[in-house]
Image (cartoon, rainbow, N blue to C red):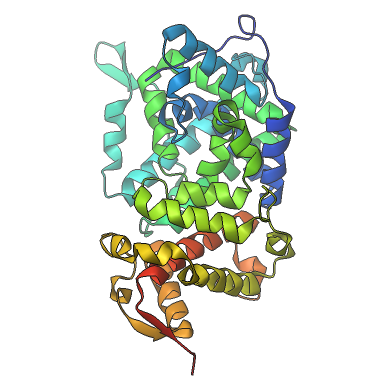
Length: 390
């Protein structure tokens, strides 16, 4: 895996107005607070190297030689905004706040996944302070308030989503208090990464990667924007944040299952023969309960397509949330209730109610809608018969 420390005086600017405007627009569309936006962008800058190496976006054709790889890293890193890569240029920031938040996040993630948080230090560089004393350079104190919040939590998508938003808020709150805008927050994040790698390359990668692998689909989607814009700009322009989130959610699932569902999603949510997201799916109106029902019914209409010819293929899929629905007979209300209960059980996400305040933000809702659409499509194909509601 590559570590690329870009220096401003060696690489020409590739800052791109489309990416800058699109990412900022979607951060706002998702209703994220200024603190979360800035914290996310700081993390994006800090972890962009990890994201390039581990992204699901295929960029292998841009990595065929060491020089081409270097150019690719440089272009992706500088597309949203330029950073000097020197944290001294951001001397008004307290890097201890960032380091403590990142280290505490790792401790929480280890705890959630059943690992011993003390094992984090095995991945950090040790330096000898004196003959009888050594120190882990990137080890910090634990933020007790943040750690206590997840003391009894169970690992699931909703907990991970809430955790990363808490991380971003804590980082962004400091940036916001110092008057940093979105671009400067990203720049500071990359400079922080450069500073940390001078002390411990592998430890820095490990701490940032632990968080990267915990990102919820919404934040995976937003994180992928610089990479997607570099490798497949037309795909980014053609997709709504809902679609990007949905794609990240079902990443890694059998393509025989995903491809027909993704095709169907294009037919449902986009104006025919265009890349325009249907106006009837304007999530900003916050008619969450109505949208929830519309998504369920729209997903249910997959039964009216030739995707049903693939039912036998779908039945062989082994990761059904509600396997009891295979070859079942029930009415639409019963199917809806079964799927909702499955989502609560598997993802710890509760359905939309009349009060939008129960959600963290609109992005939280969009993520739920994506899950509801996918799970309804998947299960609707394998149900034998859906009868009329009583």
